[in-house]
Image (tube, rainbow, N blue to C red):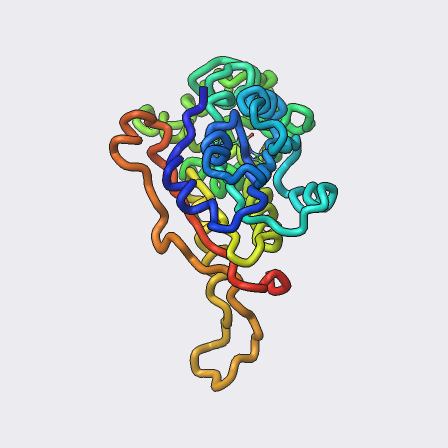
Length: 312
Ligand SMILES: C[S@@+](CC[C@H](N)C(=O)[O-])C[C@H]1O[C@@H](n2cnc3c(N)ncnc32)[C@H](O)[C@@H]1O
C-alpha cells in the first residue's frame, strides 16, 4: 500500500477555516484523502481525481464509509475546470496535488515503470491512453530522444544513450524494461549506471504522461478556481516539478513586474496568491526512515488573495 507523505504538514497547509469543497487532484489510493476527511466538517465535500482507474477503485473502497460527501472522477487534472463546471461548483476551498507515482505503479512489474522489475515497456498512468513507453523508444527520432533524456531526465549521457536505443531498435524491437535497462547499461560506464537508469526511466515516464504540461495547466486552473482565502498544497518529487511550482507561485504572488525605475506601474499585474511556505517543507528524518520514498518530497503551500480570480 502507498504511504502518503507529509500528511500532517499537508493538512496544516491545505484546509482553511472556512471550507466547503476540497479537491484532491491526485487521490492515488486515498491516503491523503482519508486524512483530509478526518479534518473536514461534515457538510464539506471532497472531490477525488485520478487518471489511473485502478488507483481510483482502491480509493473508492477505502473511502466507502464517506461516500455521501466524496465524489470520484477518472480524469487528468488538466480537466478540473470542466469537471467542476459539470458539478456546478464555481469555487474551491483547497486543492491538493501530490505528484508523481504511487507504490501501485512502481511495485507492479506489468506497469513497466521500474527498471528493477522486468515487464512490458508501458509507463502509462492511465491505461486507456494509447501512447506508451514502447512507442516512445520505438518511434522517436534520435534528436527527439536525446532532447527528452536531456530535458526531462537531466541525463548528461543523453546522446550516447539515445544513439544506443536507435542502433538496437534497428536490429530488434525494444519491448521490455529489462531490454531498455540493458541498452542503457551497455552505453555508459558502470559507475554511472544506477543514476542514469533512474533518469532515463524518469524522462520517458514524463514524456509518456505529458507530466509537465499537465502540471502547468492543472496548476493554472486550480489558481483560477480557488475561492479567496482558499489553499493550494503541492507535493513535488524532482527538480523539474520543484522549479515549475516555485516559479508559478513566485509569479502569482509577485504582482507588478515593471522595472523598479518606472515611476508608475504599466503592467497592471496584481498578486493573486500569498505564499505560505517561504521555503518548501521537507520530511523529517524520522519520516524518511519510516518511508524512504518520501526523501525527495517537497511541500509548497499558498493562499488565494481576496477577489483575484480575474487576474489569473
Ligand atoms: C503520489 S500518488 C498520490 C498518492 C495519494 N496522495 C495517496 O495518499 O495515496 C500520485 C497519483 O497522481 C496521479 N496522477 C499523476 N498525474 C496526474 C494527472 N495529470 N491527472 C490525474 N492524476 C494524476 C497518479 O496516477 C497517482 O495515482
